[in-house]
Length: 372
Ligand SMILES: [Fe+2]
Image (cartoon, rainbow, N blue to C red):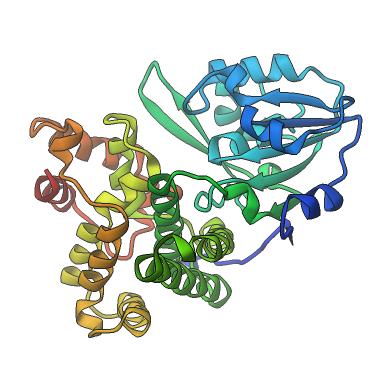
């Protein structure tokens, strides 16, 4: 009999900073810090002149590619002992790489994981509510020449500390907020349904789901008046979901959304949103009992209605926040169904294997077909 190792750990100290004043006081900067962030945040944060600042825009736009990482390593130099990453998921992931003794060549990090040696301390401050990167051991790198995103997974990439400061999320465009929070929701649901989940990770998953549902409800009922509180809730929920997902992993929603991001350039959270309901409907069809029924019960408890209709009720709520368009609107062609299915089975097989039920090539192709 195969005994599967299930474990729970959280390596990052999590601190709350009510506002920017609190953040500056809790996180004093030192001359040997490297601050990786965005131009607009440098204006708000006004770091002292002795701190070396690296605006991510200076390195390029979009995901972290080997070329961008190389530019970051060269710009960063060697004279720093702590990296402070403040930004969205890609900025936080890049900050993780800048703590390594040797981050180049990037391809070696994937072929020889023993080269992932952390040489500097790391503080991460997220400015979107969804990726959970501040508490995960993951780092995504996009290789444009093969059109593939690969994920590093190493405890060397865990932050020593993270600060949750909702004021940094002020002014985030609503569609970015909605999509990012849906990424967090997906982390919470997929980790809850995972065979690798534990009572500890499930507790965080359930609480994250509850908080996100309440925040979405408040926004739809009260509009922008509820936004400040909702953003704070979403941020906390995103970090909880990140811890759960760091321990129990993601699954089919992330796997099936992968070609949508790499081929159709749909943002990660939105891509998850586009496929989420179709995957849950298939799970319901294939294995209606088990952990899925617990998820349906929780959704029905918070949103009302019958557990059997939970994913429909959830969908109605979400459509108010982020209308779901068909994949053809994003440029997907029928001829890409096989290509995307193949990408999922070859490049995302680990995530498919971590699914609530096993999905066949036909199941995956049918999901794309139903959403086209
Ligand atoms: Fe995600």
